[in-house]
Length: 332
Image (tube, rainbow, N blue to C red; front, top):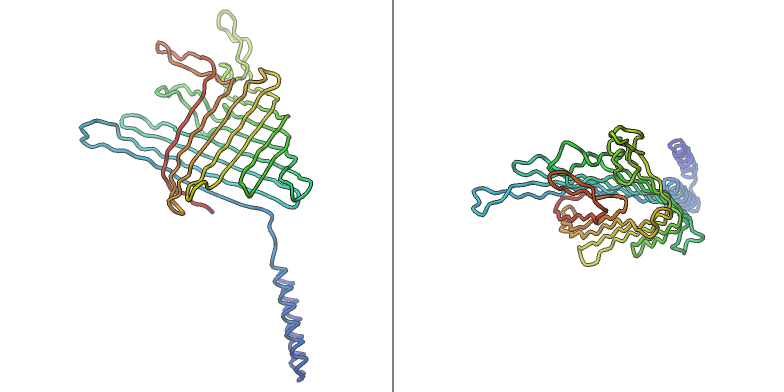
């Protein structure tokens, strides 16, 4: 590119000197016109269109309460949450490839109590689509989704035995279907009649327990291990996902994510639900408050309850998490 600019510049100077050696006004006008045309060519060469749309957002939420000689009593505590959202979207003509990475990690500290995890998520979504014409919002799509966590999870106050670990569980979804993507209305709906779901439990102790729906280990009458539990479980089913994000009122942004999955082979009709809803209250460019809810129901995940000092496995239950935070956000 530098060599090309040098050659063009050399010809401009050469042509200019040759023109200035002549005295007619018409020649001077032609020289100026030539310089303008060549300059426009150089400017055109500099411009390179990108088909990538990039968005990055990182934030930190903090909540704290402290008591000193407070007659009504109370426990001082501090909570922090680090979060990030990174998107890369490639769109050209009839093709679209969207990628999104979501990370969250939160902890809490109370007087007299060790640090405890409050949030932990690593999510990656990738969708590739093709449409017949540029006017349509419907794409023939293939979708991949991956979810896991960063650190061990515990049933507090028990911190000796982890009930979850990185890649225990981890979930992958891979399927084909149709996607409705409307950038103007900021809504996205994906429907797949053929999606493969893999549940990974790469910790053998948890796999032996049959955690998160994998096939548990087999023991004989003397509790001697005959066969270890499987570390993975594969399902084939129907998947529907949706994502909606819009400013519903001034400086109030509502975001909704929903995922519905049902396995064809095992209890078809039992629907796994993953629903997240959040309101972002924008104070200014860098400060936001947020209120959110996250609900999960998975027929394969059995809840645990403490009975007479021991943890007992019961049936599946609705998992519910509610969040309120105020913090800093940086978009770039």
